Amino acid sequence: MTSRRFLTLGIESSCDDTAVAVLEDQATVLSSRISSQLELHAPYGGVVPELASRDHQERILPLVFSALSEAGVTDPGAELGLIGVTMGPGLMGSLMVGVMTAKALAQAWKVPLLGVNHLEGHLFANVIQNPGLQPPFLTLLVSGGHTEVILARAFGDYAILGCTRDDAAGEAYDKLAKVLGLGYPGGPVIDRLAAKGNPDAFSLPVPLAETSRVEFSFSGLKTASLNLIRQLEREGPLPVEDICASFQKAVVEALLKKVELAIQLTGVRRVAVSGGVAANSGLRRAFSGRKAWEVFIPPANLCTDNGVMVAAAAYHGYRRGKRTGLDFSPDPALELLSD
Ligand code: KG4
Ligand code: ZN
Image 1 (cartoon, helix red, strand yellow):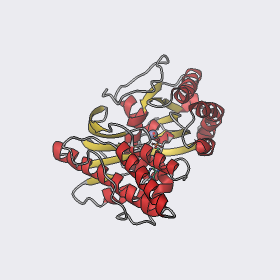
Image 2 (cartoon, helix red, strand yellow; image 1 turned 180 degrees about the horizontal axis):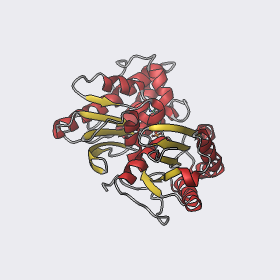
Image 3 (cartoon, helix red, strand yellow; image 1 turned 60 degrees about the vertical axis):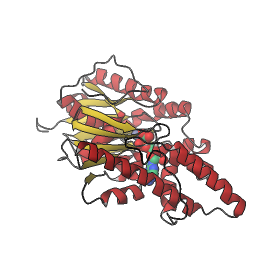
Image 4 (cartoon, protein in one colour; image 1 turned 90 degrees about the vertical axis):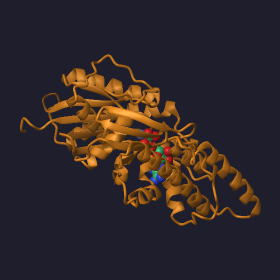
């Protein structure tokens, strides 16, 4: 091993995925392991926090050791330069499992530890994919818990330009899927069905889309979709694919419009999309089609929660001089703050 090789272990357990990765320097992924809890939560139509933390607790250490072994790390204390762990936002019980595991390993191996903001992690999925991506850029962060437009003036220097007033975009997908009996999470299945439907079949309203502020609202779209479904149910078999396509069109249009507004307001045309909903095929197509913008979207496996993004955010934070000792606490409502 050369002395220039810096290895970061990234640990993510903020919601329903246990994920561990080993990153070499800033963008070389040596291993990435994810244990998904989809089947565990599917019968409930959403994440059950108690079940999530119990499952993280069972899986996290075997996952750490398999990620290390795949990366060829045999002596973590000697070979790892840093451990990064998600410290928030997320579910408290889930976060605690990752944070306590990381603290114990850091202490045992005498490796520095850095608590990472999950949202900054999502942003760094773009950096992994495009190591040359340099601020300033806009980030559209769209996940199950967040819908935000952020101006990254520099790494570690963020301004939140706007967010959702109610539901996150992914949450709207999950809620619609629940109503349609499509299971959890709703995004991937609605995305698949939407591809077979007519996006112009039904006109669904997107609240706040026309305002001059960077802001979102998806709960009204959910209510409008519910009302449409009730009305269509009375008329015959539900045109599920058309409903999904029309819903997806409305969501993507709302996101596009507000990013467009953010570009007008800031003059920054470089747009990095991240978070689970960035895996959406309609969104990827629409954003990639914007010729006047420079658009970055990570591959789908880096859009949803993963350990690589946490390792990358930790690596960059550490290089910028960020430090957390062993006495920090997980914060379920952690905001994306600048250094
Ligand atoms: O980032 P993520 O894995 O977890 C959070 O931090 O929330 O995002 C999960 C969210 C879920 O709401 C899920 O339905 C949504 O991302 N999602 C999608 C797609 N894949 C995942 N939404 C739309 N289309 C997709 N293909
Ligand atoms: Zn996430």
